[in-house]
Image (tube, rainbow, N blue to C red; front, side):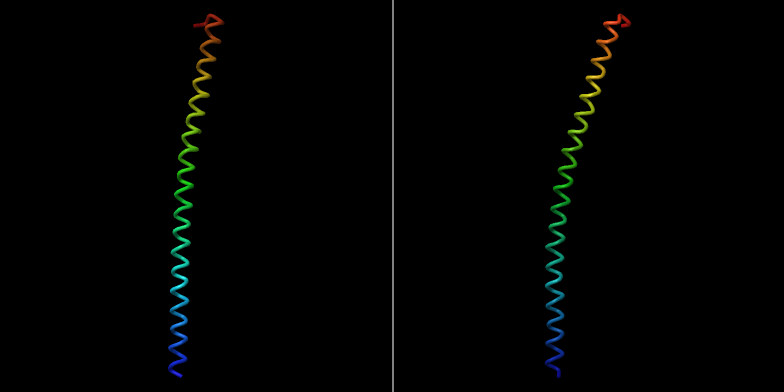
Length: 73
């Protein structure tokens, strides 16, 4: 009877141990996904900033040339 109980406990401990390893691997995968997402968001933010500044510069250039043609400046 005692051997059966010890075997059950050993199986339970083994299952818990395997689950802990699985959770560790999953956590590492999630951390890697988080890092890659952060990296992509960084580059996307820089691209967005560049596009916004470019559009603002083009608008200023266009308005300046427009007002110079109309002789308002």
